[in-house]
Amino acid sequence: MVTSNTEICNLALKALGLDPIASLQSDTSQAGIILRNTWEATRDAILRAANWRCLLSRSASLARDAAAPSFGFSYAYALPPDCVRVVEMSVDADYSVEGRLLLTNETEAYILYVAYDKAADSVARFDGHLVKALVAQLAVDIAPGLKAKSFVPQLEVIARDRLAEAKVFSAIEARPKQAACTALLDVR
Image 1 (tube, rainbow, N blue to C red):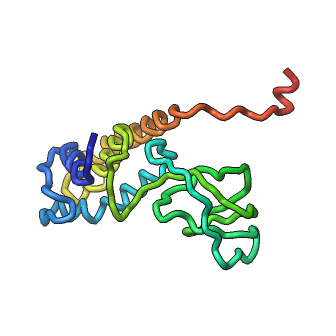
Image 2 (tube, rainbow, N blue to C red):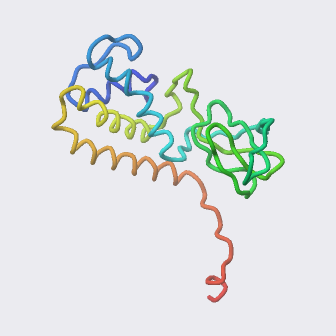
Image 3 (cartoon, rainbow, N blue to C red):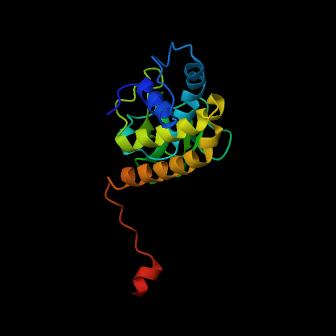
């Protein structure tokens, strides 16, 4: 299991056949600079791509924003600082995420969400499949800047496959919800 963002970056460099960097924060090589400029955007895109079970968190009651939405919903709630993606509300209610606010008609809001503390930038909670998906996408994103463009078409296929595989493994770790009875089922 990886314990740092530098380890993930070095796995991406290894996939391109390049030498590792010493530290994502301080390496001054071309690879270090390109990775430092690419890391956050690639990480955030992959984290928003699925409901990663290894990163799920349940909120306490969300803080209601003083200003109500001008139309559409009655209340606005501030999302937790580590919220990357809202998965669901604790009640079956309509909601919309706009910026860093959750809009709903509910008088209280609790959410299940993908959590990642960007300030700490700790990848210790990432499972192996999430790491492999992130490494593959990071390799795709940095290859052009490191003069490894010839690898990009193959890497894009690998990245897409690794992301799909990671989503499957994350999804199968929960019991599926029971479907509500519908007219079609009632006919049977």
